Amino acid sequence: MTKPEKHLQDLFHETLRDIYYAEKKILTSLPKMAKAAQSPDLRAAFEKHERETEGQVERLEQIFALIEEPAKGKTCDAINGIIDESKEIMTEFKGSPALDAGLLASAQAVEHYEIARYGTLKTWADELGLAQAVKLLDETLQEEKKTDAALSELAKVAVNQEAIEVTAGCALRADPITTIDSPSAMSRNDWQRSAKWEPSMSHSLVSDWPSHGV
Image (tube, rainbow, N blue to C red; front, side, top):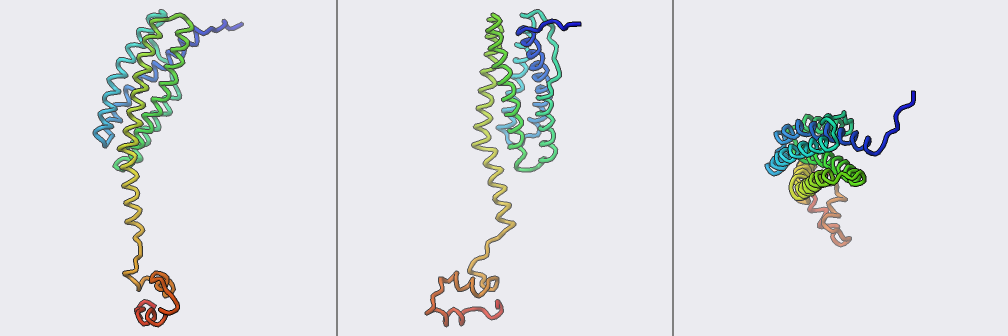
């Protein structure tokens, strides 16, 4: 039996179901990410986006009504994978200074997926002559772009920098630098080099070298 031919309207509907599922999934994940966040600014960003996502779900339901289809999602493996990754980060980096950086990376992966989906749906809605859907989709698209920009700024200015500084501090404590103030820890050749040794200084350097360090 021959399958019925598919058209752009069918593709639009299927992709709408995809992003509807994704937004519902994101709504269940954002409160957990906000709770796990260590930075107050990051926590506030997640809470704000949760409120925005609720509005985005409502817009999608309006679009389903416009095309006279039930508001029903379709499993989105892409968003499931991204959210599973964020769960791993929350578990594996709990209490780590790098936790917020990992949460930000996951959140931006979500944003980039949403931006791609909403941009495509907006283009298709325009092709299909769905003017009201174009307006609704563009409203959400602009929100997603602003959220992504805010997360980028937060990562650059605060969270990632904090993780780098703490990591660098740990590295310094784990690998202390030997200075010229502790000649017993140095070889004779190193002692001479550190004192900018010259042939004429041989006698004084040898006499100054601590006997217990040889």
